[in-house]
Image 1 (cartoon, rainbow, N blue to C red):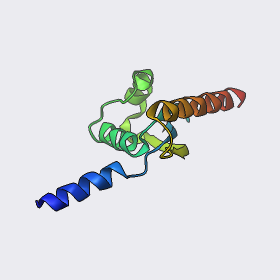
Image 2 (image 1 turned 90 degrees about the horizontal axis):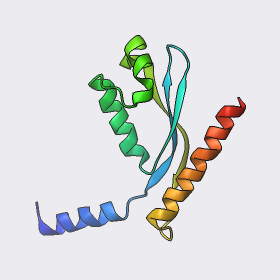
Image 3 (image 1 turned 30 degrees about the vertical axis):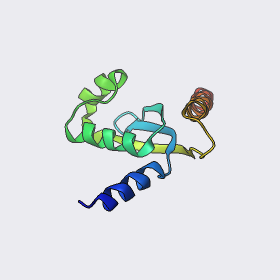
Length: 111
């Protein structure tokens, strides 16, 4: 790989859009949903896909349902995304994601 190409790849990675937000892992066997937050939606979605492919439960809290209904009955659902702005620090972005999670948990309690 050329040095220029490596430089371009590094720059492209640094300038990529960082998307975080709220997602759910839903079990179609009992319609239960676990609401979670992440600062890296694409990475989290990849981890979930790997967990399903290898039949390794991604969350200890859902292990009983995972065993009862099987990995294929679980799906990854994006509930809300937010993009990190260039002016935001990592801490500020984390705080925004945490507040968004609180809002979603409150919504779920109301239902």
